[in-house]
Length: 442
Image (cartoon, rainbow, N blue to C red; front, side, top):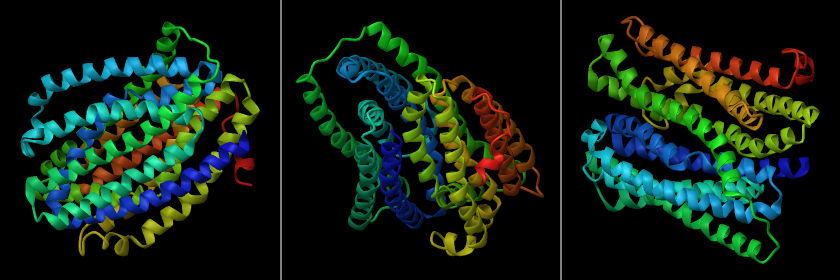
């Protein structure tokens, strides 16, 4: 099992690294084609899109992968059939809700009128691709996940190049085209995953299978999906609020609205794009650890869980430390890849603690989910976000700090979140908090 798990990690790391390289090129292209203000509007819309994605997916990848990992193979076909029926009904419900709610969302008024239609199409694409992702994660076929993740970035980059070369557009239309590439890319990923899922389902139909009760499936599905979706909804909602909070705080400090939008574009479109680049490693660990930790915890294999946790922490330290040093030391040349002269280099340096601790938070979340501590993860997110947003508003509203104060608040919030996650995991594993620090640094 250990050999297969680490093999999956290697496969996902290679694909994720290539995908992140493409994502970096995508962000550079968007920055140059949309400009500072256009990039600010694009990045301001992304949290709203992510919120929609969280609702449409209902965290099926997490809950289904956990159920698949904990269930005998003979039950997989019945499990998938129940989940597909549920997702079909849930998707129809979400689409009806979108028809009623989209006209009431004021954010869309600042963008092209065709935007709500594009987002409406995104709902079924995300919902059904979530089923395939959850299945492949649960059976540890990480090559499918790796291929889908790489395909997403590759297709989007190609589409952006073609559209911006063939169509010389700007303003609302340019932003709409950029969003269109996201939708088209997700449709390609859905097609890719569905073909392989259908192949596996046909194979399962040829073998002896057992039936699992519908109530049992839904009870297990909702026990994970509801709290995990609540966590993701909270993250998505707070992420959607963040650009408006930042702009409002900056305007309170005396910054003009247009400049505030541009500064947010430099923060989210440049500093975040660079700083989150190594996070693909953390997300790979998240994908692999959720089913692995769930399986080990179901077997009550606490010693192996402890070793896995500290290996994850040591592995994170190995790449997080040089990444932080690189960001701080080479902020100017890195941000110059996007804009020749901007404040993004200063933002990147100030955000080093934020990125460093974020790399640890992601694999810790996988452990919390696998250990059945999803509610704890949710409470941690609420408290740390509340603390962070208060700091961001108070400090960002000061004329002497402005964006510096915003970033200080972000750093403070992620440090608090990291320690709450760490202490909770150690408590569940019944370890003294600092017992294994000597072992961890060997």
